[in-house]
Length: 219
Ligand SMILES: *Cc1c(COP(=O)(O)O)cnc(C)c1O
Image (cartoon, rainbow, N blue to C red; front, side, top):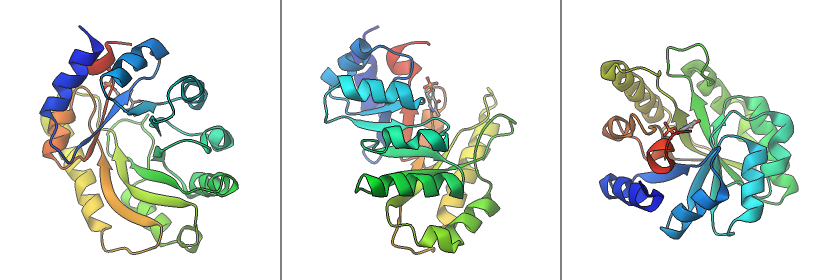
């Protein structure tokens, strides 16, 4: 199967308000270029080093999304160019992003990752931690980050009801924070849904899907 064909097939099924992040982790630049030539401009990577290498090699009109877990000490490497960081799960990490964004004279868009799965291994904030973060004075004073919304990953299971429950939970948390107002909050994005569950995610209110293997093949 060709990457361009996979991409166009998926794009034709997405509603207009849903953004496609092509998840290209572990794939060579030649594969990414096939997607680029088919019109794709948003790519998702889960390792900062790999994303930085690809950014250096590839056309400069690509928007690079960091979708993986972020270590504070590596934020500086992507701060000059990253377009959206999906996996922000602590005030401390957000402070580091704010600091590095400031050094680069820019505002970095972020999503806060919410823990919605039943698995131990997934990162993220719970609802209380989210509200605590958003109401903290440290957050309110940050000038070089902007929170666009939330990101979540469902449990890895075949149980559609379980997944649906988790996506619906994320949407309800997103709805519950709409009343909070601050300069650096511009809530319009729910990043949920991957190759196996993106249609369900869209039914539950997703506005951004992160799709890898259905475009580029297995890893
Ligand atoms: C790898 C990855 C994806 C894409 O997964 P596929 O099943 O290949 O579509 C989406 N989100 C995150 C956070 C990932 O790490």
